[in-house]
Length: 195
Image (cartoon, rainbow, N blue to C red; front, side):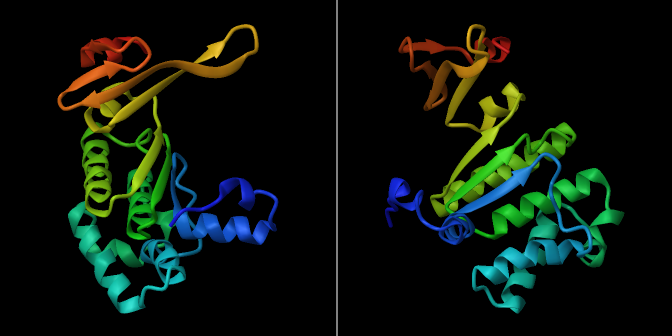
């Protein structure tokens, strides 16, 4: 289904919200969980809003908890009582299990240890491969980006305007990377050293 984004812009805010709720999921660095809800309810709410029945949704949540090595008893835990890493994993599950066409991530692995970050990004990559969805993730972690991205757009600050501009665009071609601006092959280690 195609959407006229320009035509959507002048419409009522309620239409914008409906489009966002139907098409976008988010993972924030600060996770933005509902503090007075338990962990599973934070994941369940967007699933119910999308029309999923609660039994099926809870089964999916239980399975996902096992997949990311969170003990099942934490499902009933208030999110304020969870560690930062546990809250971030809940945020990932909330975004992935809502099964939206586009996932946006703002430094989603910034507060995670490297092993957990890699496991969750593998889950994101698998989800994209299985559903045909897309992800747009902002990250300073170039090694992680090189391992999971299909395209990396590096931004830099224009000294004159003090605004962000595109510095380089790299696209994965099989196991190799190509600089789309110069059309030259580039080694992954060279991309990482550009930071």
